[in-house]
Length: 209
Image: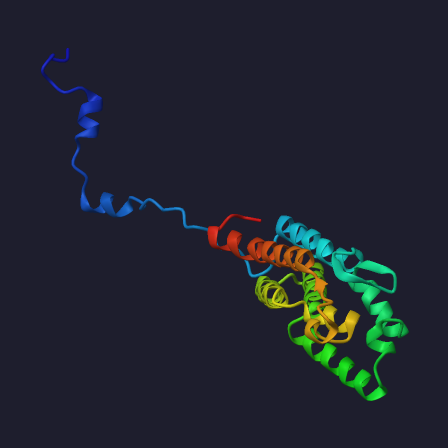
């Protein structure tokens, strides 16, 4: 018969002093480490990147650029119609200039485009799209989107590509005729910024994609 004052079996077990050997056998509690994302995109992040890149490329045919005066009977332009006018020689930039000026204009447009302008942004979107379809490296996509966003910010200063391509000169030399492309620049900036956020913010948060 167990005395009321004597410890029960459970109390004895819980109060038993552990020997050093038993202490060594106790496994330490493992803390869950924050899982790092791989350098490539996951399926969900890849899909979001592809959608944003496709939307950005779709602006190539959307008339988001306007001119203050009609040119060739239109005031709304897309990058595609501007390119068609340049190649076909129907724009004032290709009709009203001498062959020497026309060559210099093309050279200036190409230089500005590939460094900071419209064509650079579309080329960056193509790089992002191809990269997302293949290895989908976060570093490549993030770096390219960052350059594209910087290009959009620089293009907001004066829409130099479309101004030279459509009018063939600066607003000061053309009596104030100018291109209004803020909407296009804002859309491209938003697309690049969202792509950059998709591949970097999730990585910083450590959220599996």
